[in-house]
Amino acid sequence: MTQPRQTQDSRIDREWWKEAVVYQVYPRSFNDSDGDGIGDIPGITERVDYLDELGVDVVWLSPVYDSPNHDNGYDIRDYRAINEEFGDMADWERLRDALHDRDMKLIMDLVVNHTSNEHEWFRRSRRGEGEYADYYHWVEGEPDDPPNNWQSLFGGSAWSYDDEREAWYLHVFNENQPDLNWRNPDVREAVKEIVTWWVDRGIDGFRMDAISHLSKTEGYPDGDPEEPGPLGSEHYTFGPRLGEYLDELGAVVPEEAMSAGEMGGADADDAREFVRRGDCLDMVFHFDHLDVDQADDWTDDNWGEWSLPEFKELMTRNQRAVAEPAWEALFLGNHDHPRIVSRFGDDSYRRRSATCIATFLLTMRGTPYLYQGQELGMTNSEFESLSEIDDAMTVGLVEDMLSAGTVDSFDDVREAVNYRSRDHARTPMHWSDDDGAGFTDGDPWLALNDNYTEVNAAAARADEGSVFHHYRRLIELRDDDPVFVYGDYDPLLPDDDQFYAFTRQLDGERRLVVCNWSDEPATFDPEGFTADGAEIIVSNCDDAPADPVGATVRPFEAVVYEL
Ligand code: NOJ
Image 1 (cartoon, rainbow, N blue to C red):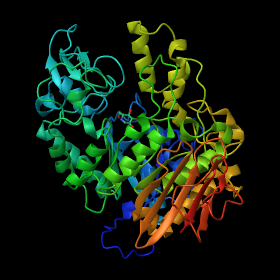
Image 2: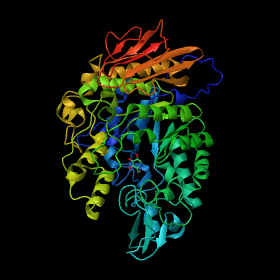
Image 3: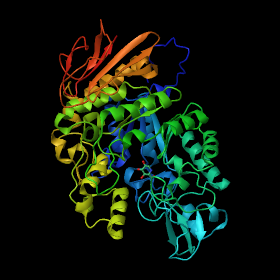
Image 4: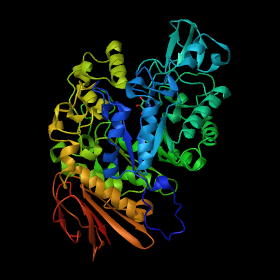
């Protein structure tokens, strides 16, 4: 990693992971080296030079562990083995070394809220075997009478009955993902051993999955119908011992490692509290800014309606309440969310809106995360039926609604499914316009987006004006200029419904970011603001206005200035 110019500001607490840009690889959909239609680890290694050219500093690898794949690897059968479809440990070591040779770091996904129901611990636990008996949340009872009314985040009851043990077990996600019982000190020790095992293999940190669900309310009381989220979720999210568990985990994560915790249900205050709490989490993925475009119900027809002023308010709150006093994970998408151009940009202004969003994201305070394909401006697909969907969450929730009779057919939820499905992000990467998009020589495990002939890495690399090269330039800028990493953030025009504009400031140096986040031209004229002598550093259009104040800014035009 290149080091940014030294800053003189004594308030700056420099850390390598604050100065990094992270790239998330979803292995199944990244690059297939052996023609079976499934991405694999040698395939990722083949593309390390591409990541190096883009300039990212860290790769976050979504799970590559042995798994029966009910939730594409987020259901782990063996934490110390590699999924055969992806290769073996020697392949993983080659990938690690290829990244390290190019001065890039590698962080692994730590999925320890739950395991697969095929994990040896669960197999022993369901037999009631010795120390494993209490590894999961078991409640004795009758097969037709679950312990309480808690619902799973993936639809249906959060309890499943196990015939072998003749008891119910808890699963916040699907029935193949039983929750580990963190109240049991042996479970916590076993998890810490996994952490140490991977640290000893030379990784640089972790993205910690579903970390807000580790601690559950003591006992298993009923859910309160007034609470937001699935019934009972208040009892399995931010439970009373969460901080204690994270402290314990933090004690075995080395000081210099990077750790980012995924905290569904967290708002800015929770995120700040957990980052500042101790040594476990350097930053938190919280999703409150991504609620901006969600409808209340799957049958609503207003999915995807959102307002820029509200979005700015949420982002500004995150900058002020999290990024400045603590640190922030900056992201708009990942493998669980739609493609960000289709969601927050405009497919008919694909290149311009993708680069506009890139400009905003990479000039904010925090550590930016790119999800594979974002650097190409990949877009959403269209799903005609449930059978085209692989995503366990969408399938689980829709099947649940169909069987409960709350909806009659797929058509009732078509809009919501096409808006929310996690498969938008999981369609394979587009490397070229060859058959199989250069992703595979075989049949891709999930249908490709048809636009791969136009939107692909080969075309993007050959075109200096592409989304790829815009990301590359922004990453370089961030590597070079500490103002974008550590500077204070001050929004301009907070109520304007076209501009997202702000300044960043550090050690007397100021930068200005002006994004016209709309499909209409607009005049930039914040009251009392002057930008005399402004110099353009990066822009996504030719002939950007030299002095932005009073200038007309084109649809989705985005310009960064040194003031
Ligand atoms: C969050 C992960 O990002 C998601 O893909 C997964 O389904 C759940 N956690 C359960 O592990």
